[in-house]
Length: 379
Image 1 (cartoon, helix red, strand yellow):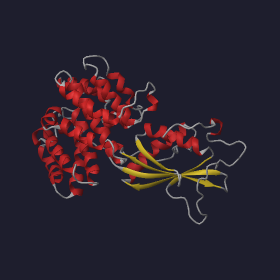
Image 2: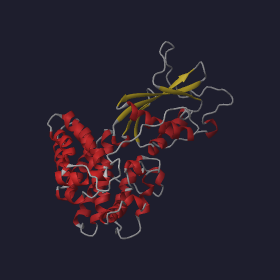
Image 3: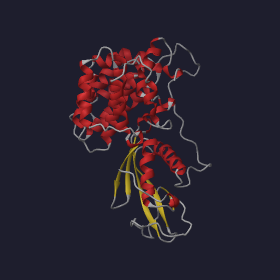
Image 4: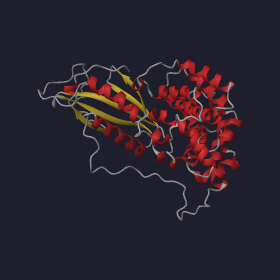
């Protein structure tokens, strides 16, 4: 969506108390209450649309806007968990303002709440809405598999992964999806490395992903979790098994066949696979000459824009630019900070707790991991 010209003096305050419904937002019937979370907004519709585009970058969500109903359908993957919700603009004649209504359509309620708290905070920074109340309950805590007694020798055994892997192999779609979802959190934990290596879990994940390519609409849900696991695996020491299992060909196949798709859900799959390629290029730069040529050919299908204004790029375009940059620069050079701009530091891409490292730091992460150190300590 292109940027719109707005009168910034009418952001969220209308001193003359004039109606801002210049473009005809719908009016909700008086006998129907506003559902979900909502707030009054005294600014222009144009300004709200412009700021939502910016908030979607910061909060890592994909928008589609219906100009007839003044409604966004929003897809997001906080902690790689799918949620779907609507954001609709209503005119409120009685109070001479607009009402912005949020409605959860699909996904875990707690995950949705945590995500919406981030969205409201970002909107407040742009003079839209009240933000998050100081009396609101904090976000849900994130649990991990670390030993409570901090035993350095603690590691998750193979048996702990057998259950999820059995589900992953199941031909019933929802069972396979459930097993893959379990592996996402497991792969982010260093205590599971031995179990992942011994079970060759990455190979199993790729095999399931390759089968999912031919599952029509079901493939996007499976490929989203598969790509998230591979994205994490590429920076956590599983790259050799992944390359041996054909992850490069798999990633290029998915990207090459999905570049014309109009599904919002496929965007997360594409971003994850571009992250995989960025990580692998950083690790195998010196060995991959013909491979890099093939990667460039597939990436050109996305018609990457040549622009010097970083803010003009969406999240997928930013990752593509980072990949193109990586393929032109040796990983021995000091270019890791370039991709720190991949998205704002408040996004899940760069929150250490979510283990989403800037992609071009993958090479440095792997080098430090070989020495038994955690790459996060260096950056």
